[in-house]
Image 1: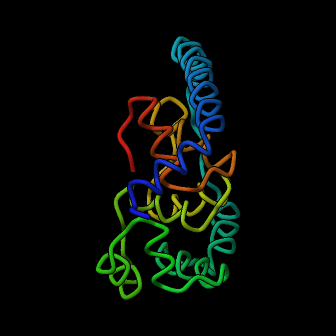
Image 2: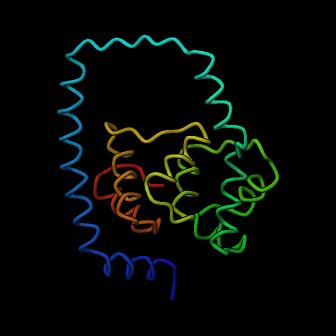
Image 3: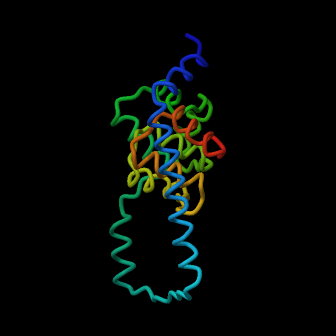
Length: 174
């Protein structure tokens, strides 16, 4: 079966899931936009000095820090995925996977980081933690980020289904 036919079949089988996701994400967007307007109208000022004990606490928490690359590779091994299975599931090419594997300090773009989180079948909290290691966060006001956040929260980790949801929301695909 060709890849295109396989994707169409997968989308048709998950039509109800996709339609529900699109509706929920649109509702969430309007709620977050309302919250954002309320927050913008209030003058919130932050001022906090960091104490030495706060710094030492932070240092203890981050003593065994793993890089983004190492965290992804560890997650891949925990899931029992081979390199080929993993990079195909993540919709990345072999070269990019090789860079991830060999460069401890590799920092992917946001889309690639999101794909890698989906390939690891992460839920929202672990995905956000992994994205943070790459220097990214999922906004609650950006429609693309909101859709991605929803997919993680609902354990929708198949990239083809995520892309179909994004297409229906008229957002860029991953």
